[in-house]
Image 1 (cartoon, one colour):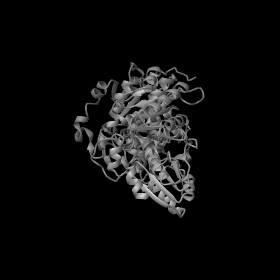
Image 2 (cartoon, chains in turn cyan, yellow):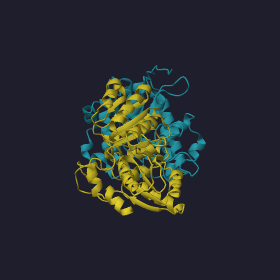
Image 3 (tube, rainbow over the protein chains, first blue to last red):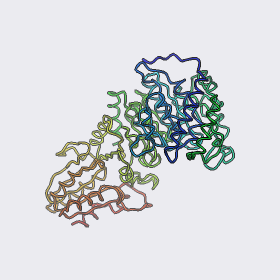
Image 4 (cartoon, rainbow over the protein chains, first blue to last red):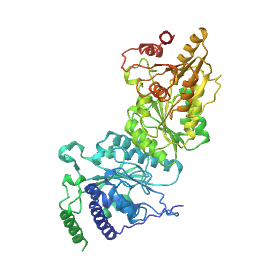
Length: 277
Length: 304
């Protein structure tokens, strides 16, 4: 049986140190491949770290009874480096990222250790999460499901189908985080698609418990989830900065899918060092 | 067929708690209603939301369940196509996508409800299997197979209701991936699948009146296709006729031609399919088939 006791605090200082290390690790990998999704990983990094280190419970057999599904598949670098730090993936796996003989691509693949679903096409993850959460409830396993969605994929009609079904089927064992960095290929979503907002009201109207907060403030996110009423599925709108942590990447769309050159890499490493001290 | 599917699913559901059915706002008649009443936690209605129907099935299967997605064929396969491809086939999950009314069965509902390209579309996706039973008995066999296999996703093309029993006297039993003879003869072999099989029987009767000895080979599993069984039939009969309720591309007919070419078959080979066209016509199922040129008399005239 899983240990169902919930930790009632989350060590934010330790999380900050981990996330600095993860950002540096992602930057290192960026120097060995032509392109990877750095900025989308940086915007959801604190959320993914929180899920693995603060929310998912430890099982007696080492396997968590809970599930994490990365719906925004292009954020998977965040997941890879965390899985590496937890010993699920190896340094060798990461070294072969996007290489002909590697098992890690720019989107997560089901079957790779630690990866619970294949994503990359947007708008799929929430329905799969609802199905997973439903199965856990129907079988009485007590398993919880955590998902991270991009804000862009909330534009997919299928995501709204899943929001309707999540509340209809009462999967109160599902917590979905929206990485709301407000950026898409053609600019700020709030400018290109103003009627996309407000999000919280829409989710509430669809029957979900909603929390909203700074997505880089892991402590606040933890409190929001820990304090949930738990009668409905929950969505946490994480206000984030795309490219968070490296000044020249923040809110600059090109970094959605570009690797820094040597100079840019050095500058980024310095910035991340400074924050550490 | 629908009723036999529902009866069988109910039986499976009683024996196996992992059997789930996810429907998209389709009325639960007959045993489906029994399933819903007895196992409400395993009967999910997503409403008119087919993408989420497939996605939820994937989520259930990722947790070890054995789900069936169930609605009208165009809505179970075409509408959520990319979900079928990515969630079910790419992840290779044992989910059965049931398509009711495959072909042009919904003859009065117009082209939006005709499913005349499904074999080509489903068959093009890696990992996907396709089964199209020809009568209620086969529907039962196929449904049992779907509910107990872990090989991967299956597209199960069904008809509607009232299909005649065609396999009662079949010399071969039903087996996934293996074409079966429903009748054995020497001169002509008619290959078909699905509910248009009744036309294979009609044609066989006519040919037999002319003194021909006729085989009927039921290629109920379209993928993986029984290459060896088809090769053997092409080798054993001087004349082979394919009748199929599907577009000319990507179904059984072109695959049989390909096999015949590869093996340098010496038989005469005729194929009859739906047209590559949306035919704006109404009436009975037979009327629609006839509008596409699939009329027993015409086929007979063409091959005699």
